[in-house]
Length: 369
Image (cartoon, rainbow, N blue to C red; front, side, top):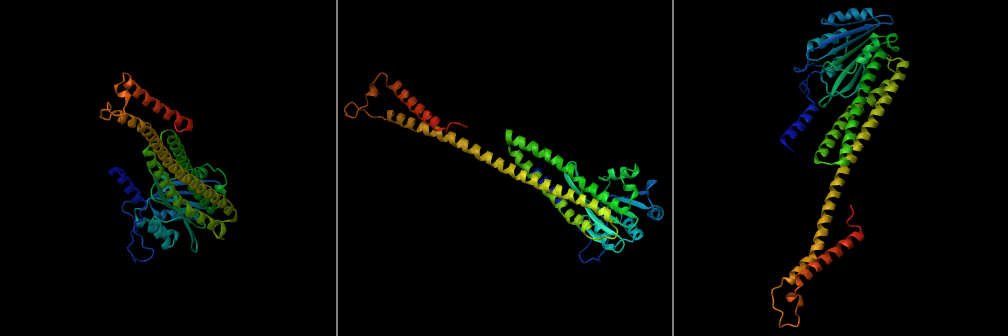
């Protein structure tokens, strides 16, 4: 492995490494913000059946007016670089301190936790730009609000915002539980374009493997298989989380919304099946490459063996005619030694032996590819 590829592999391992910023034995609910995380950007979308208001705010205290006025208030916070802002938001919405600790420690797996007056849901979004990455989104569902925390700006939730702004579907006429479902559904559906991209990569690698297999293709297959395993680890916990939302009788989730959550659960199963299929395809392509290498080696060994087999009798004939002795006084003389055509005779004999071997190999099918 080259130094460059080793560094890339090390960066990839470190990207998934868990770092807890709270010291061992710290009080439960301790909030320690990541100094490298962006500063929080707070955006509000408050709406009802007839109107909607959307804006960015800088004072956490102004959120109380939206909660008192609108039937549904969606507060989205991008960036977790300020523990003070996170604590102020937690106090305003009366969030449990253990849930807030999980918000800033962004290595959580997908899960659902129920508290006295709100639900805490963790999901994971994926991004595929230069490399595959995962981002935690923390969702709090209350009686008239949905609060989301994201690690940084940029997400897959813009279709949900468009539906709210343009009053598409039933989202403006229902409660915050349906908004929480819409957010989860957008997060889960964002996996499909990523899987399509990996599906195209697998098709290209399969074609390259069939036409011109090289050593680089093994590296590509291994990297793709590692990314698919990363996706599998991100998707798997969503099954249990969504099953909990559809199975358990949460007071904040309407019965009608649970029907939609079942569809979201079904999407998770589809994603998981696609991942398993792609991972098996990676394993099959790797085995195919090894088989191709073995077959090529066998072909080389066959050719070399045939050449050696042909030249063994030729070498014997040449060695007999090359013996240095006088046969004039011996009854076991070699008349060809003093014959005018002895040299052409020996060459013709060698050619006849070689042709006989080639004809025999051809009749047995050993010369066919």
